[in-house]
Image 1 (cartoon, rainbow, N blue to C red):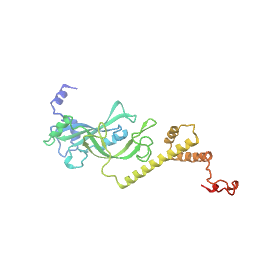
Image 2: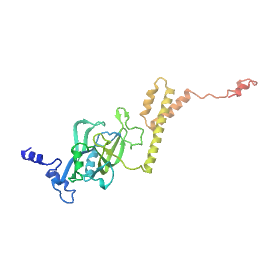
Image 3: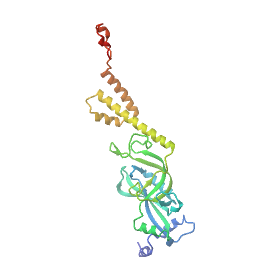
Image 4: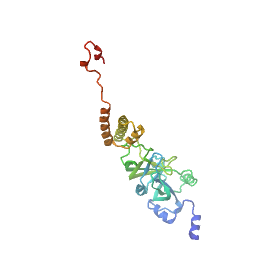
Length: 295
C-alpha cells in the first residue's frame, strides 16, 4: 500500500467511504452524496451454519440472498415502520472462511453486506454505538421457496424426523432453499444465528399452514405407534433378538416396509399363539356337568 493511500485513509473519519465505495452508495441516493456526508460499515447478514432453531440457509442460496438484499433498509427489531429506517445495503459478497466446517459438514461461508447511513445529528449516537461495538448483532427478514428435512429431504414438518435429533450420525435440521424475497435487516439483541441471525416468517400462521401442521403431527403419532407395534410383534415371534434391536430396525423403516412387516409378523404370531376357545367341546363332557357352560 502506498504512503499516499495510507495517509488518505488515516485522515478520513471512521466509516468514511473511499471513492469506489461512494460510487456504489450513490446508486441509491436521489442527490449525489459526498464522502463526508456518509458513514459506511460492514455487517454479517447471515450464514450457512445451523442456527439456534436448527435451521440453516443452503450454501447456494446465499448468493441469491446477496442479490435480494441490495438496496434493502436496515431497521430495529424487525419493526416494519418507516420511522425506523436507519441504513441501506449498497453492496454484498459471499465470504468463505477456509478451514471452518459447519454442523452440516460443508465449508462455512457467510453473506457480508456493506451499508451506509447519513452523518446527521440524529444518527450520531447510532454511529457511536456501532463504532463502540454496542450496536452490533443483526438479523434478516426474508422468505424461501423450500424448507426441507436434512435427513430425508421431505418438506419440513411432514416426516418423522425431529430437529435437533441425530439419526445414524446425521444431525436433523431444516434447510432453507431458494430464497424468493428479502424484506429488511435489523439490529437486534439476540439473533437466531449465532454470528448473525435470521427471521424466517412474520405474523400468525395462516389456516392452511395450521392444518398442515396438525396433519403432520397426526402422521408422526401414527408412524410412532406403527413402529412400536412392529417391534412388539417382532419380539413375540423371535425372542432371541433383544427388543431394543427391533426398535432400532423399525425406526429406520418407512410406512410401506413397516406395514409389510406388520402383516407378516401378525401371521407368524397367530400361528405361534393360536386363539383358544372359551367354551370346551360339550360332547366330551358329562351331561350333568354344567361347568362347561361357564365363561
